[in-house]
Length: 343
Image 1 (cartoon, rainbow, N blue to C red):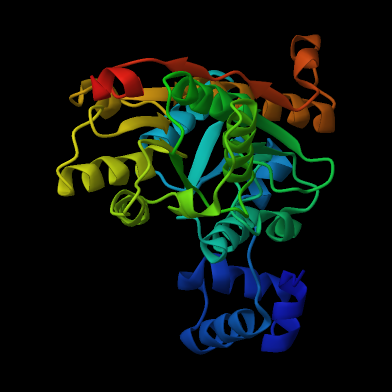
Image 2 (tube, rainbow, N blue to C red):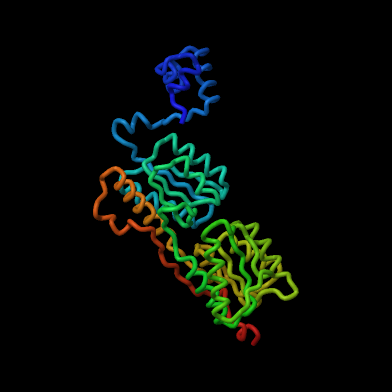
């Protein structure tokens, strides 16, 4: 990592002058300041903006990176993290990656400069490699697993939740059940697809690739996938959708095609939200304890920080292992039996 001494040598000034040029520019002549700034930019110098505070009293900051802050699920995760952090005297620096590894890397680089005591991240497809930027920093992966060996994770039981949802649909007599899946380089999407497949197998239904289409965790892509599935000559009689944003898209597609839920289409989504409860008919969902996930992730991180700094207490011993919280299938009015519909 490039340090202040290297910048000073490149600019032909003393380290003290380089420091003033970067942190107290009003104390340095314009020509000198510009020379130092150009050297810093050329060398890729990233200042540790909290280094002085760390030397005197230690940082009370943790980083949080979510993938879509506009998604109510992620907003609730963040609220759970923040409430626990604030209760323990920590400030949360939050970033949004928009599912883009490049944005995630920029967030990690920024956090590295602020020297937080820990990190909570909802991984993208490339988090395993990007975490090298903050190697050694206590880190908890939230909602998803990056695949990094030895990583601490806090997630839900996606497999059981998806299996229960699709078993509910097969129990209602549905045999052509479509699924709109998330990106298969994301652990939650893979697990939910596996649960779908297992439920079909348990019901003696042959899996068909043509009934599974990608929605990429987005409303727009979920809508397009649902339009393709529901416009077929033999459309599915039921849909299981892998997250709440894609479920919004599926509902919009059904409306575009003038399909009535559940008369023409039974629908189960993954994630609960206010709109799922208040739409007509109310949506059956696999509910995740989003707020609790955020709380547990932050508690887990504080335990890791304590272990690293030697301030660990027995209160967090039960958080040593990575954890999975249970999901809950909520039955509402968006599903119906095939026999009842035909009658």
